[in-house]
Image 1 (tube, rainbow, N blue to C red):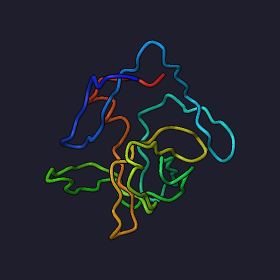
Image 2 (image 1 turned 90 degrees about the vertical axis):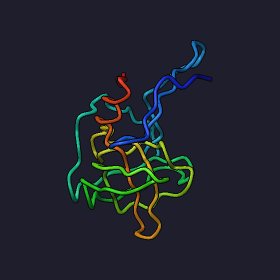
Image 3 (image 1 turned 60 degrees about the horizontal axis):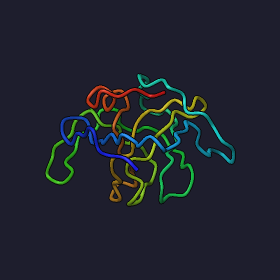
Image 4 (image 1 turned 30 degrees about the horizontal axis):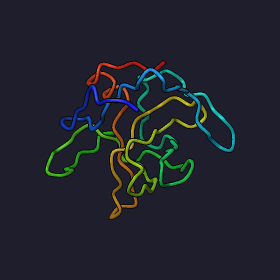
Length: 140
């Protein structure tokens, strides 16, 4: 279906870019709140503390809502120390990684699900503008 053409697992970004093959049809619409919603191509909006966001994860089945509780989170994942992450009070589960995080009411992508933090009932995400800058990709 595609090949990895860029990745990062350091600093503030844990993300992979997969270049799809020519016969794959892409869409910027996702089922959200019971209907298809168009993802906005804006990538430079960083939600601050108490901003309501939603996650669309694979295993969480649909969107899950919550708030940003730390917009400068730091932590270690698989022995690698990360900075400038965002922590929310959304509960993610294994398999949600890579899911989109939206600013509610705008469909602006705020980031990508990085990890769940079950000890704190939290989900950590990578800021979308940092992932785009490191990988050199654009939203359409």
